[in-house]
Length: 303
Ligand code: GUN
Image 1: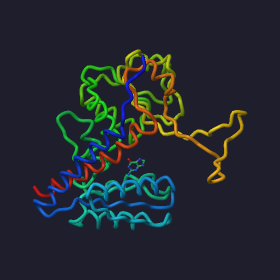
Image 2: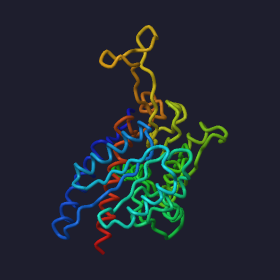
Image 3: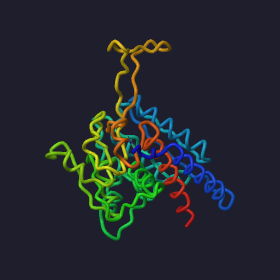
């Protein structure tokens, strides 16, 4: 059996369209344009590229974006002062502090300065705390984990009662996605670097979420036939020539690379019932959920 491909690009496009329609309605009814402030400290190229993508999505969905770029050596107090100013700006409905921050800045201190009503990334400690508690609702759910759940829902996967295995316990994916799955009544196991016999644990999973950042780590023999596999990994591998040497791009003259997930996709797709590709699976969902959260922040500002 070959698995159903979960088309994150198409699902994200549908969410962007829903956001566009609702943002236009908010503007027409209340004169409010949802606004997202981005805070980028330093010159990490990947972070710059992520923030650019987020701002582009704002433009396409009818949201306003307020970019803030600070040099890598900006004192922590200045970053916090900026975040507090944005917190008081009525045109800003959501604040996104791009992570990681430079080493001299305490991430927790900065995230604490984001008002929870504008925490569209869902990383404020209060929001993460509420995520893990019964009968509490965070103002916002973190975007990539919420995107994982949205993919499962939109393909009709049954989460309640399922055995869900999460590989990885990072603050931005592994931990929050396991809390969301638990909140949806899955039986959740979280695996990490000290887990004994990961293969045996993975074999129990009806739903497998791989978020450990190791290329092709999950083997087909580990996967329970019929499992739904969500691959959050984004790993860069060199492209090789037929003779085994590194391929070079004719256009740029640089070594060619390709993106692969945490699962051995070609083999795992023959065992799973559904699987996300990399790229084009979870990736596009993160920004779509950020737009959805920012829209919601603006809608809530009316009430
Ligand atoms: N760095 C990697 N992923 C994310 C994310 O989802 N949000 C922010 N703010 N930073 C990140």
